[in-house]
Image (cartoon, rainbow, N blue to C red; front, side):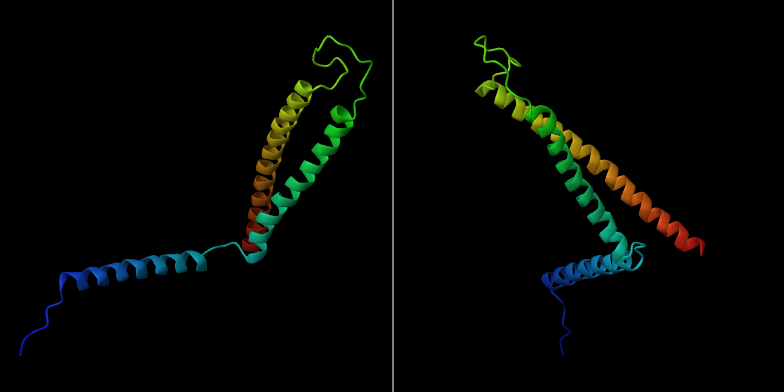
Length: 131
């Protein structure tokens, strides 16, 4: 009888399956050892989203009351910014300013709310361990 010698391609396929199996085992271990519960994960995703939504609406409302709600004064023909006449150039500049300030405010709120929600989850973990 002849002994069956596996070919190099079969060895390569088995090696690939072994690597996949190791990766799946590592992912399973990571999931089983994850200290965050489903509630923790929801809190860390929902809280920053709601904070960003509320902050964006508040910023828009504040912008509309202060800058957007400004009444146009007597028309002048000198064409300067802030002359009371909202022309095309001023409208574009104000839109760019609003977009930049809104993005900066949103990024700050997002960063702070992410840190706050993570601190809240960490505090819950410390209390759970202390019990």
